[in-house]
Image 1 (cartoon, rainbow, N blue to C red):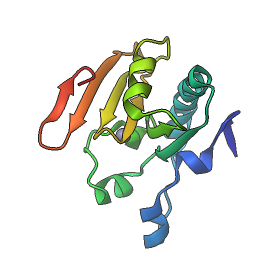
Image 2: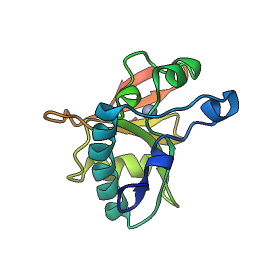
Image 3: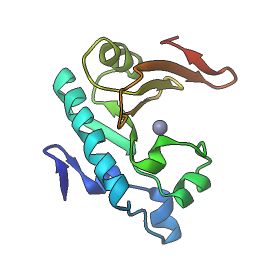
Length: 143
Ligand SMILES: [Zn+2]
């Protein structure tokens, strides 16, 4: 099922953990509505790079989030955040270009130089850019 032209509910709720352990990762209606907002922002990211986006984690039920050790206040639990990479663009370059664009992100995080975390907000987005690295935690800006 498509959420927006290039993003499906399946890819926004994929969880290898849930599949392996035999439980579902189905978002409730409020999270579904948030996923729509999130996918609209991801469509803008896709257009910015004119390249496909590979989503590694979108919505996470409380159970999935707990099992993978995600932050308890994670925006993933509300369907407001996705982790992804853009085909043939480094995560660092991805964060740099999105931060300079009009894509409506709330938080944009370069995570371990391996993927990008982008969240959207129901209200006014903060446009906060962060870098997280093993050992140093969250740093302000692209570091
Ligand atoms: Zn994330």
